[in-house]
Length: 385
Image 1 (cartoon, rainbow, N blue to C red):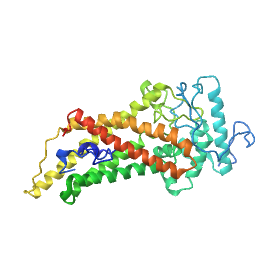
Image 2 (tube, rainbow, N blue to C red; image 1 turned 180 degrees about the horizontal axis):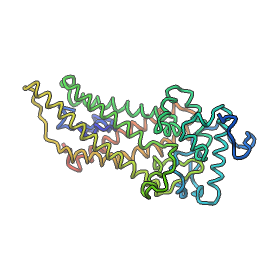
Image 3 (cartoon, one colour; image 1 turned 180 degrees about the vertical axis):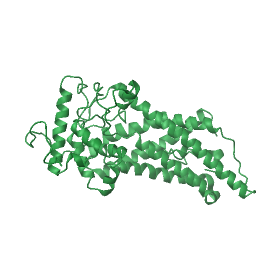
């Protein structure tokens, strides 16, 4: 779904398959262990039951974890979840973290990679036992690609790529669908004026790409590498810091989430998407109006039938739509459909997995278009015909 979706364009079901296709009819005319590293205990391949070649796809839990207030904001799963007692003081949490640390250290030693060569947040997570060996396996695989190695310099991308090696492909899918459908919708609305109003079309499509990016990026499952907050941090800050990035993602071994923390993930992402939607709508409308005024100043004969738009109320309405509808749909797509259903079945068939993810995400954007039209008509910012 694209941010520009909100400002200028509301598609009809038969003309759009993307949430980014929402052009307002009345605005249609404008927008090293190292060998020196030490272990807590003797580590050997025989002492660790860990197969490096097993699929990295997390072992799914049949239920939501109910422990883990000390999870330090953990992330996506690798065999965690389900019993709710990982961190409740019965010793299982410590056992899981010791196992995670030993697995990770063994893999690093075998690959000749030292802790000092890793990003600081990843090294800290390994030392604290917050991530299992499967994450290290994925990290070492991603390091073989120059592009992925560069992207993993950035914390946000690193957390998402370690959770899902198809994350960049999904970003490309979403943005590609958004560009195509938004451009098609702009042409459908403008027809003979399409090339005369390319600057407005460009602004619309650019804003759509930004929205599509945020709608994939924010709700994506992560391997959380964030350090614990300071003891002086407030209760609300600590709560949201410990929430997952995706409410439905499975937990890493040694980490669990309470139901309240999962609900907190929806609230936090919703607040972010509300800000993105509202701000982008305001900016997009301002850009469109500026283009229109400039055109009229140059060409006095250019008279467009443009209705006055309640900019603030329309922008707030779109922010609410992104915070509720888009937020929930994209979290379900990433955390339930893709991570919990498709990836466990197709983790060894990346091409088929990518194709199904593309189909699911395209259907989601189409559904978003329909829901936006109904919502816009319900609150009176789009007239029924």
